[in-house]
Image (cartoon, rainbow, N blue to C red; front, side, top):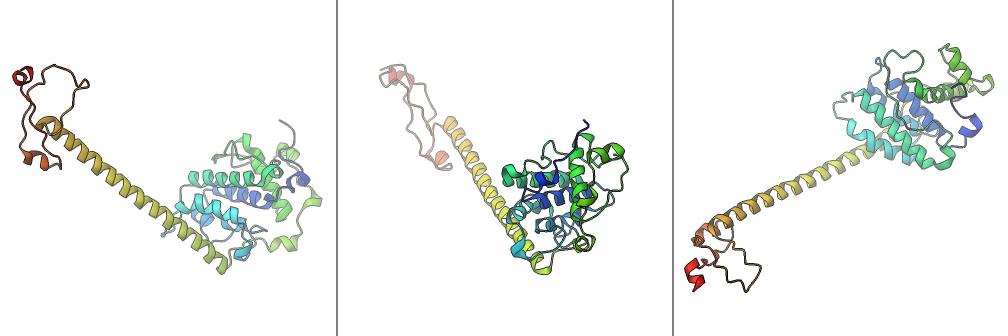
Length: 286
């Protein structure tokens, strides 16, 4: 293919989530860098973390009431389980997959106006040793969108000199962000009040997940106990005659086989009443 990798700016700007989507791609690109800890990308209080993408101007901090609610909700749901008290770095491949999943949900929420942005699928995977982008060639559109956003929003030029890429993903001089304004959006972190707000959302989500796990554990434990009791009870009935199957035809004259007449104590152990002894074959025949 030789055509443009992404839609023109005028088409992309119609998506209200253009800034958020491109910021996600920038974080996604950094998540493929083995020199960057994934913990620094997904933690709430770190510089240029994924949570800043939920602000109106990503990487520039904002108060809690300006954080995009859909963005927060999706991040809490997908990244919340990866965050632990000891700040252990989550697996790189998992972070890459979940960031793309969240971005896909945001694009879907944006509707038709966001159809001009690079789609979620097929999801990209980090490719070690890649020459141009951190992903396989078929997802150069993701790299181009992130590269173009850094130029248009942050004024950061691209360092790669690949002629083919530059032809399909040009950085137009007139679209470069104002250097002074763009500088304010670099190396930011959530202000304390916004960080506390996000941490409360994460804490509530984790507590809700833990409550669901406890309910599920109790349910499964009860199910195992009931099934185990039924198995024991049925075994008792088969062996000691505590349970007796009635013939399907009430008028049947086929003699019933002799059965063991149980001692009531044998069945009371399992909470069953002893069935009366079945008549012997000779008595039934008479």
